[in-house]
Length: 413
Image (cartoon, rainbow, N blue to C red):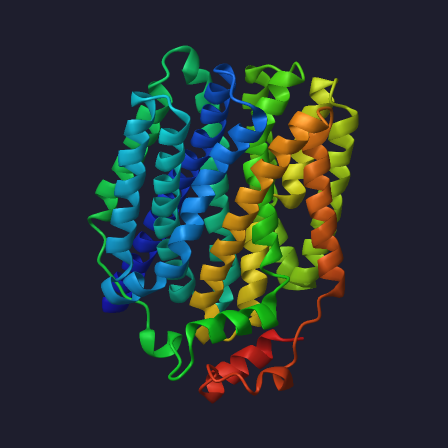
């Protein structure tokens, strides 16, 4: 009976965390296009619009170096609660005063809250998942975030009713998740496993980079892609004669495509290798965004191109995280998750800035050129990446016991 009860508690915890990730994705997916449209409507240049969008990810980057210790000390639940509180409070303040730098500061705060929520839930899920179900659980995690993120842009339609309404809806859903979380029992990471005696933080970062620098690039690419599409594309579309209504269809179409293929791609990566699947989907994504730049005047063809592009590269974040987990010893997984968050944040800041500059200078096709260029860099990096054998990591002080070594050897090919 106790085993059944524990299993039910674990399932309840997992699905509640998944729901919270979905709600966080919804808030983030709503914020980018809604504020982009509002800033464009008051005449803010595209480059400054992109800078404002990057503030969310500046917040993620600011929080990344400091987030690990509070989780180890206070557990997952308090960190998630504080993160949700920061997101809800900021959402309610956005419509109060429409000023560029006020919104910039609020977006930084939302980024800090989002990072607290995502890091704690991500480590909670991965650390409590068995090796056999890790890929499946991370895929569901990506599905939940993608679904929420895909629904978020639909809130741009509510701007016609009231500028307050999208923020009220996002705040209400986040507050609901906060209430459900109060019923969850707090847990802590296994600090004995996750920290190595005499092994400094910077040493861990360098080791993670040494072993898995390419798996960290898909989170960068996904951040670049996500922020470009949701932060820059509404501005690009309005200047290219594409209506807000079509933007609210195109962006969810990309996400729907990614949701359909999230689990199948995870299964294929289990069978044929993460790196192989990552290279194939990024190449196909580059192809479909290239097609989108050609068929832009045909809205139906553009919709099809966006859907297939999403089906190909909408899963690169979860595939990259899973590939990283394959290559790292268990003791380095929390550090790897922190670094994945940093790479995601850097990509998310780079995307809107590059996209905004290209929109102002190149104009036609600029957003597609930015995304295709980024994908080409990632594909080239993947082709030159070499997975380390166990002999290459014998000097890593953090691999303290034979079980870690055996697990790592089992992951390496």
